[in-house]
Image 1 (cartoon, rainbow over the protein chains, first blue to last red):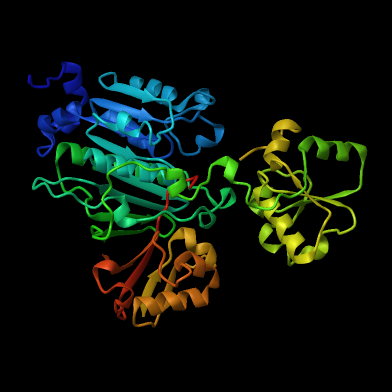
Image 2: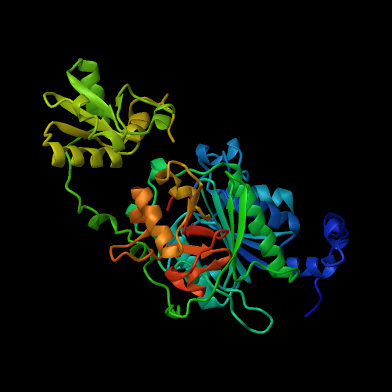
Length: 383
Length: 92
């Protein structure tokens, strides 16, 4: 095979790599010959893609099904205001092509699933996982194991970050631990924080995604010691960093095929979801009508005070965790409409009040304040 | 005293305390005491059979207790115990 060569422009562009003795043109050649797939072009994917593109990885695949949203811009530095509403992969490709015209991009505007993962991932030398949910993390991991390629992993939540290099085969042919060696099973959905408790400090994906990009470059070029068999943990609040040792789990069943990851993570298909007792509901239009007609009703907002600060519709603020304690403030005589952000917590509050205190006058605001902002009052901020 | 480091996702159950001192002599006792001190942690740390959940890993120093003596791993005065939960990003 003919040796990969560089144009004058490329040599000048990459000169700060070429003059590092351990890196030099050999490292740059390996980068140019590499095919890297980045799954997720959000918080982690942004710095990852920017740095891999700038560094000169020859072929980069990007998988994302999402479109750019205003609330992404707090951390997804790949995108600008002009990209809001665009498919992320298209906006990313445009931005990255302007950063480095010597890189080839392939985009997959689709959700990675058990049906398409192997087809999309095969042919790549390495996958960098920057997704935001457990089913896709296990899917990426298992597909990497089946295809025998490394999975450069990074994950963030609020102020915590984790990085590792999974499923890496060393020069002796020894394969390092994978994600399932660390976490054999995901948390059940009830135990993971809800929309109100999520969130992430904007700069954290920048830090963790950059560390991830560094590991990708090390794995490709073979310089240094990749983070194999180790987990890097960062607590941004206390600036506490630890690098913990990981081992292979001998009791782990070999991974030989992809499974239904939604089911594995306890997320049931929509039609099976209705196990919970339904609650009485009102639509945002009905609420609006009640307000216009000057009807007697009470509106309770069961979100947290910091959510109330973002937007509110004159409900009485009683966070879900204190509804029983403050039930004396909730009327039993008139129509009471309870709302939260999307309708989930308010339904929980209603069930709790009905089951514990025998309320029968409670109505859930369908779709929560998000629906109200969309259908009735577009001046309300959504989050 | 040994130190237990609480990861940020679990700090809402520890009144935002990041580090908790422990006089316990084993990991099992330390984690059980922790769950007694902050009952909200119980269901996040232990399953119904009282075993440490499979999406939580406990490290003593830099090592996973599974590579040591599991829950019976001894902890000393200067031991740092890390609780590492699976995190997946914004959605989960």
